[in-house]
Length: 639
Image: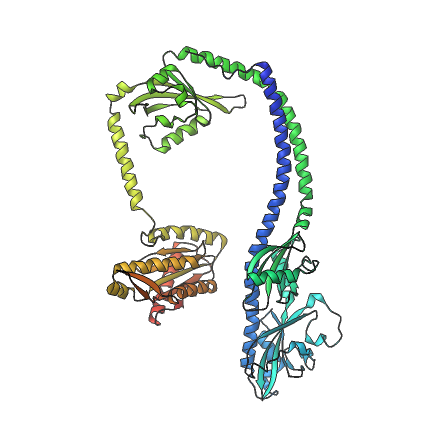
């Protein structure tokens, strides 16, 4: 038998390898420094861009909701104060103040005549003040009964009365005007609401304290209405115009500024209000904040270089000891190779070498198996857990012994009793595995091993059948079934209990679905179920869970969703079905556009701590569903 000597390195070669390794290590350290520094910078910029895009959706929703409050207040007061005389009790200041005292968005509410003079106001100091004529929209073309709400300019004052008192401007007390016309005794008046800009800016300040970004609102003339702590967009002339050019192409998006290469912005324009919510980022400011990190990384690179020099000096001496131990290993292999099959493998399990007896038994040449995994001998008898346990043991440096049934090149099975010995380097890491095999094929053939193999295969077949039975997917619609829904609830309950988050549940039932099956057949009914499932999934978040729990009954689990948010989702799911007919293929080229409706029951809870709470919530959703059915179907009922 030939003795392997490929582990032996001549002294001159080792010195060359040592020098190359040292230079390579230093090159890696400094490459990591330069590449890492650039990567950190680019990653920070990417993160900042992602931050701007994620913040716009949340903040635009908050802005729209806040402006909804303003418009609702104006419409409410227009209906509430439908008076015939200015002396009506409903126009008293205290009565008007009661309408807005709970609002943080509306600072004051005033009634202005067609000359611009305030004749009634929730703020008594506004009485008698004159409004700028530019803030009173021309409604002649709309008629006296127009209820259109208009938005005006932003003023750097506390309230309207300061505009005409020559009071110094105060940017921290700005307000934005909104108005709606009313007809009182044949004369046109305007209800004017002052919107508290500071409310938005204070909220943004709490949400985003990053000095590298600025949250701002622009109107459709490119004028900045509000911004929190930053002045990024204000310092770049023409930014508002550039923003409008992008908004003209798409209502929401992201762009890199062509005016200032350091700026980028994510924006969402409101379809209901003259407002564009924008989050602007400044790359130059971000890079400036990373200077300390760059200096620290340079220090680590210098320290790492010094450590590498010290370690490489020690490695030279350790290598000599290692070479001696490998020589002893070769002598041991020479002594045992005459009677045992022997193979040697790398730490990742690739075959490096095998002795002639091993090659004779397996039927392979060394060139055919070198560099390959031992899987080429796999007989498919043992489960993956068997090999996983073996590799776990030997990778820890422990000797493993056991019995294998392998397959040779001709496809014939042979049995070997095996001992795998991990060899460790001076750092106690596995450098290679040496396996010693004894052929026990003849003795195994006369034992009960064949029966054991049959038993293993029977058990494996049983487990496969169990896996098939326990499938968690509804085969018709592709969504989770009731069993999967029950499994999801455990995770959702645990998250809601740990973080005290609300949970909402929707129970959905297709209206008169039995009539579809009876009239057009079950194939048509299946098409309806598949189509409604597809439409619903398109309207839901990835965190929401849609499951088919009965014939035409579905359930939707909405984690981290309040009752108000869930009601919006329910209406979307109802509308997407009822508003667009479903096209059924009836065979022979015939198609039918069928209008399908759904009744939805909604239940929500601020906290679900256990299964009992979840079951109670499910029962409430069921009750709400029956309520929707009794109410005439095609509706959402909230319990």
